[in-house]
Image 1: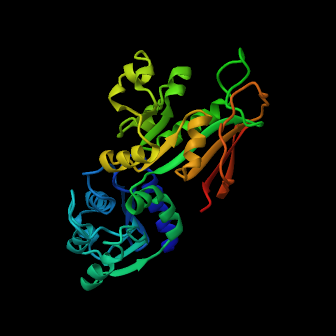
Image 2: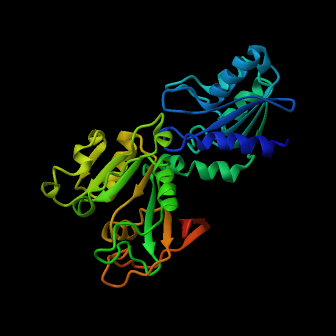
Image 3: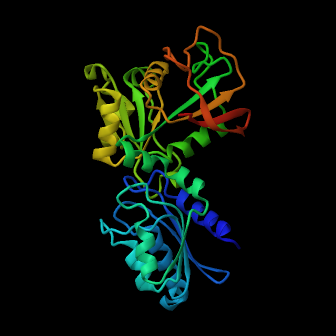
Length: 341
């Protein structure tokens, strides 16, 4: 197997941490010797061992500590070189006797970027950087954005009809999208740290905004549920967000969008936020330039002009998407893309 092949496996490990590691990034790692995979690991939660340490521990448990001497570590992010809540990974790699380190992308924090190379090479460890760099960097977009701007990565998620409506005509039922799309939306919720909605949506739909699949919730908290409203007194006390077993994970905010997002990132370690709300809030977020990614589930149905539009409000200019992907879920079609800057 090539370095690219091994890094692809490390990337798979890293994806397991999405939505679980904030304010830390999701990272995956492998320990390889010759053509044999000795151990794999991923960073599970802030304060717990980093991915490299997890992978080395798995390898040592299976093959003995001596297996690490002369081995190669593949990791999706440059190993940390400073002491935080856990020791520096560069020190751990040196002590273990690792002979080669291959990583995907540099630490997006300018204070640390590239620092690991000199430390490892001075200890006689060969370093190769930039393997599957784009894929690894894309996975770290939320972490990178917080590091560089203090704002979390924001995803607008919406299920709509082919004519851009998010509700069906009265009396036809709740759902636009099918069961397969709703299951995928649960997986998407598990990728984020917080869900942003509006007071109007709470009053109209009484949503739970929770991860309801036990396997997706294992090892993590429910996402923060953040209600934006101009008047907190209008919030219904009996709403699910204020009465269910996760009511402590509900926040109500009446300040500006950017202020709220900065608070989530700075005070609660939130890396990524998903908008699940009506057209007014979503349009306002677009108009403020705060949306980074779009996920739309198109259902094969036309709902007509009497129903609610997906976006209610104008933009000063059109919003274009890049890196667009399409995937089918049952009869629905999911489009996912990032805002072209």
